[in-house]
Structure formats: C-alpha cells, structure tokens
Image 1 (cartoon, rainbow, N blue to C red):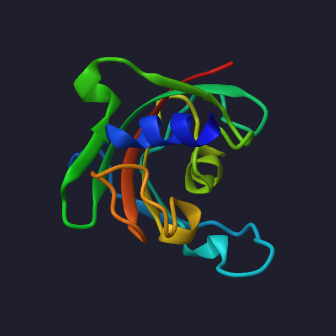
Image 2 (tube, one colour):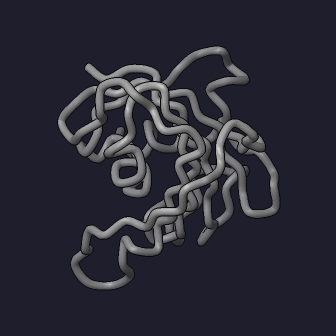
Length: 145
C-alpha cells in the first residue's frame, strides 16, 4: 500500500523554473545506516516561507512538480489542481521527501534533488520513472497541521 501511495505521488510531477528568489543551497546532514548517505540530497530554498514549520509527525499539504534530470516531467499536483497531503516522517513518501520537506515553512518553495538511494533506487514505480533515477522536485508548502 505504501509503495502504491508513493508511486502515485511521484507519478505526476514536473519541475518549473523559479524566478522568485536566489536559490540557497543546503545539504541534508542526517545520517543513514549503511550504504549511501542522505548528504547526497540537495535542498535549494527558492522562497523561504514565514509560516508554520514542517516537522516530522505533522500532516503537511504541498503542491509539487517532479522531473527527471532530462527535464521530462513525470508528475505534478499543479497540473491536477489538487494539492498532496501526507504525514511527514512516517514513510508515506520516498525518504528524500521526508527529509527534504522537513524544515520548510508554510509559503516556502524548495527544489529537491533526490539521488536514487533516497528515491526509488533500483525499482521503477512506473514507466515514467526509470530505475536508478535522480529525481528533481519543486515543492511549495501550503499547510502544516
């Protein structure tokens, strides 16, 4: 069920060029047991929000667009006109999202560059995302509950 939810979540996403703010490049600092490090996740704040902060355990609502490094869009809540809601830090989404959305504030926009080991790895959730794909997401935090 989690795999289906995550697959559906990332099937509709596209990256849009940002022109609202100068990107601030950050890297995650949390460790990961064995294998690759979460430090490979790149977070760029395009717009720094001023509202409530997203912390693990809270329900968050976002708009997002996802692309592959080729620029090909594979998913977008904006295209559907329907925001996506999930419980942050609960494993409902790929690890790159749980780590990358944490710390955002409502009103903020962030670009996430998610390496394969924090995304889908060797598995492919569908035809739009190949195995071992680096995923690019632009995420706007709309609400924290």
